[in-house]
Length: 267
Image 1: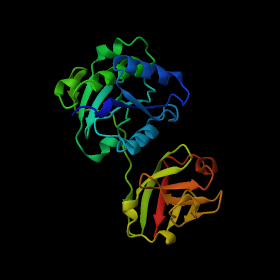
Image 2 (image 1 turned 90 degrees about the horizontal axis):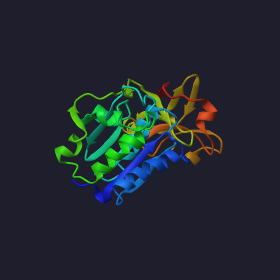
Image 3 (image 1 turned 135 degrees about the vertical axis):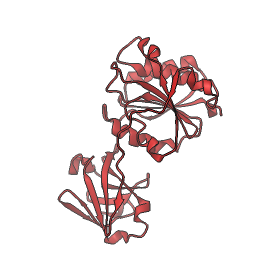
């Protein structure tokens, strides 16, 4: 299966105006002038691997099969952490082996994982920018090959079953409650949970009580504007999961960073 239109998608924590992004794009285009390069985001909170993992998971299905994702959130750059190329459901991911693919690989579909050989990493001209020196060149070479051929990824290293992943929390349904967790926040300051709407199919949304910390929010709404301006609102976001937001405002600024804290939905 060849990459349709040779698409490479970039996700980093470099910052929206960072020239590091341009350097990576320059390497990619220099090796394959026919590439189409898309920016998923460069506004991941610095070194926030968990946020990047959830954002990546939310975006992958919007890109066609054959897309190559280069994901660079790399607080361990220059250490002995590895770099991996992973083929999963027809898409390829090139990234540090530090948990960035945890959410995607939690869906219980077996990927192909290739650990990039250390000599390619050691030949990098910088110990602090493997995104430019190692991952971008690998992605460009993959884009010029046929992904399904074993040697396409095999040229960069050896197959492995081992990859670094963090535990992805699962929401659970008890007798009269759903227990979940805030897992990340988006660029609007909305607090996203791991409670998927499929767990709420038989629940009367307006009568729910959403409990987090010492606070209780009444009901699940269908839009941000269902509440008055500047009021807290609970709703199902575009990724299909429950989130807490502020109509016209920022829930993180209002409530603090609740990522990692529990949430309960009573019904």
